[in-house]
Image 1 (cartoon, rainbow, N blue to C red):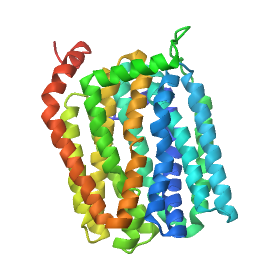
Image 2 (image 1 turned 45 degrees about the horizontal axis):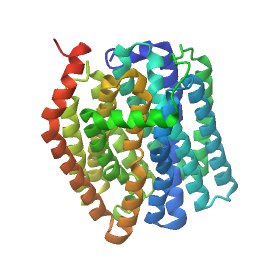
Image 3 (image 1 turned 90 degrees about the vertical axis):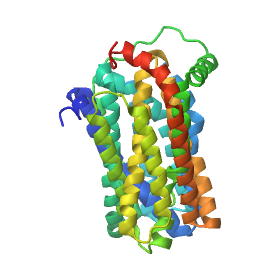
Length: 415
């Protein structure tokens, strides 16, 4: 366990993790509650897809620009500002729900507002990790521990939401999320980091953007890993958007069953994160990505035709494991091989590839589910993920040729 959580020995990172743990539990409670509320109000899978689209589209559009910005600004101050604005979004959602005047368009517009803030925050967060740990040798572990924190919130939050919706309603879940940011504010006030050095002058934004695009597209490992990640995000992650449909129409359950199943996905993700955090280094992660994306695809196909909640739960755990290992392993590899002066830009493309593809997947999955059914929709996504895994497996020798010299220079591989 000391090896698995070694990044927590850094005081700043431990404080950051504590605050974010509370916020992420609240976030997942809000996420489940708003999806359940929207479907309860409308009975529309298409609107669920639109909700996912509205919340994630800003990430695709804004993340690259936010990555440029993160290479130029004080990361601690910028992160703190985004947390305060996210707290205001939660307060607004809670106020509308508790007053009884909330409408579907309120939910969708506030989801889009949160998506804009997340689009700005995520590239900042990835770049901020290096300041929090202060040592590059612990950076990959900090990525894994951060993912563990997020997926623990994903495990606990939906389960709490399922119970809380029945007891205090969706508005109560939104209020709990707003209150969770109090801990975030306190921890940020306690963090003391040494800001990253910034050059006195920088070229125009468009020139930095062009340089970042050329770097990402011209380096084969970054390009291929991001393409596979985008495929998984586009076709596997929308299963969460379709969860209310799956629970109500296939399993004939309620909010408690939905929280249980989403929590099962979180459990699979936590197991995957613990495994990644326990690894000594990033060797072998490309092979692991192949296995993980293949597993997620097969489990999606089986989930499409499962007949009960109890059969679906382990399959959803396998999907959560596969998506998590694919995304975090890609993050760990990129954080290791990328040049420091391009870290923010590269991680913004990572954010766009993973979270930015989700809106299109959600929109297509929601619309398709209304036409051909949720089972066919999940099956098609699973088959595509399996195909992507096979493609990456065939490209592994080429990736190894490019990555091995970097690992050797960093001491990850013997000379």
